[in-house]
Picture: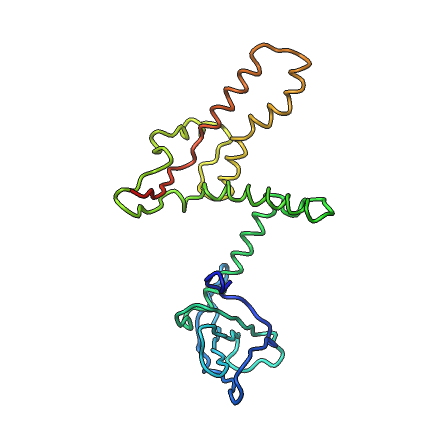
Length: 241
């Protein structure tokens, strides 16, 4: 991640090794108390201290504990490492705690998209299934509310997607099962409705080859055309002048 210049905060084991020059020593800074916010409980007081191996470098190490005393068992404390270029001592623990919510969110997403539903044995097939899941995740994520109003980088920027006034989303939303929410799950359910005509047409097309029903194929293709015109939200992309 460092080669890609990606900032990170990760957990490490208590026996994690760090190379130090001869004569260097490891030292612990003083414990600092902070309030850890919890979702369904009152905040808890926890403690954080930095561990310095020789000289302080960009890669920093911290110990988080529920007590301000050494924990020989390791049951009440954990260790993290970060390469953020600024001193994050006041809030590094709070930033790291976001990992729980990220993991929880991804778990729900993976369950919805069937990440663990594959019944494949060879790695190449599993990789193809992962590509399908990732593609579906991207398709849903770009409909999220955070992508609806991207800042314009310059006065010459324009939009590659039609204005909401030009979009026919209001007509699509008249479907009785359409969800008006802005959550990821709502976007997923609405996209499922959008692709229904194409899926149903693929299912009944073999029967249309057996029983020729005039106009049914034409009507299905027209409905699919309406679905292809769907635009979830106006997303602006900067275009160079």
